Length: 98
View 1 (cartoon, one colour):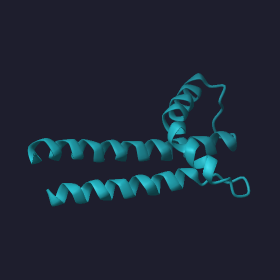
View 2 (tube, helix red, strand yellow):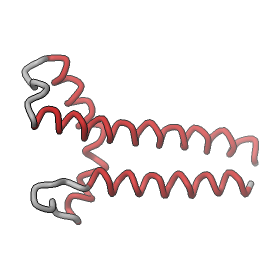
View 3 (cartoon, one colour):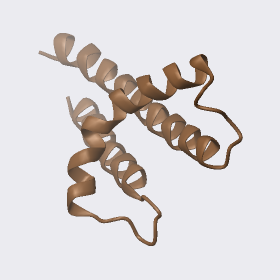
View 4 (spheres, helix red, strand yellow):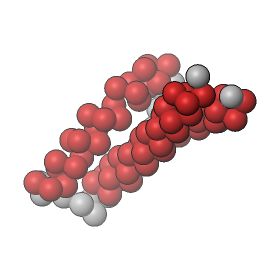
């Protein structure tokens, strides 16, 4: 059983790590666009923005329904990252206990 679960949990931990970095990149990109550091008219910037939005929005949308924006500040990426870190720790504990 450990032979199958060990690599599977390791891959899940890496996937969660990558997803956390995508959430961070999406937040940073949205700030840069909001402050006119990057221009959405640029095709490269736009394609990266659309990709990150499509990857992160399905996970952020349910959290946004529950938690409103505080004074125009969206804290849902932080909450999602905390949930993902909790899930990582849970999976790591399962991996260690096997």
